[in-house]
Image 1 (cartoon, rainbow, N blue to C red):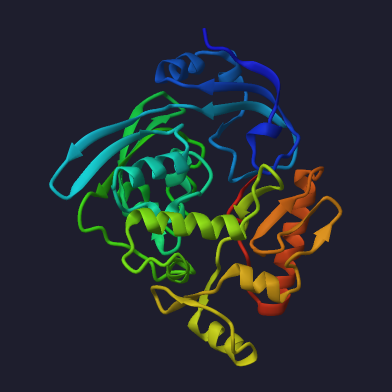
Image 2: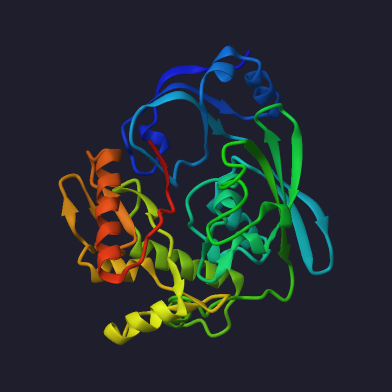
Length: 341
């Protein structure tokens, strides 16, 4: 019989380090365990939340329900051609460990996503991305279990409805499926390296690398992230708290007249993406501390728990930041972090 824990502390299971408890908690390391769980009264009678690495979640209160921790492991080669390899990865694998495994085997396509915290199963939900690369570019399919009836379903790339930090699992199918594995297709030859976004190119030059490889790109990304982002083991955080907002071209041109140095990235549909970190910094939040929480000194996108902060304090800080950005730039910021109230 599956073991369901009671009154479980979630402090070590979320990277914000918020000290909250779950009424019930279970770790799932096999699909048989999940099937057993479906038959329990706790599962049938309580609300439930699936938890991966806890790196993209903010708990504002104790969770009066069942937390289901994903721990399905394994990396399996499904297919190999002359130039590509397809692998199936268990949802409970550490995302960074998966990236390192691929980089070490010279499998290309996700090296720009090095050092992103979290699990494999959470990656497609969020459509994780960094430095010009998104995971949707390499996903073949996502295997999932429907929580309502236990039915297994395979979602192909199109059915995942990927968008900017979005997917069908974060919108209309939110909390309706348990992701069990993700299948990726990566390159084994002629890697299409992306070094033009952010500081990768400059970092490679500092490393005296003139002919980049997937290994050197990964090292550069790790160096950049370690230099800009706080270690959650030292200061609790969930990485980027907000999405980069997209605004109309007309709106951007109006802002540009007042702020000539405003950075931007072109997107589809004649819209413009503006870095949320820049907007927050312009409103004076970078490095600001309020009691137990604050905005990171090196990266304004990152909200930090300095040790004894709670979820309500982080949430209140985020709301103040949103209000000031709205007032100054008439731009609405949207949290990237999943807020559990």
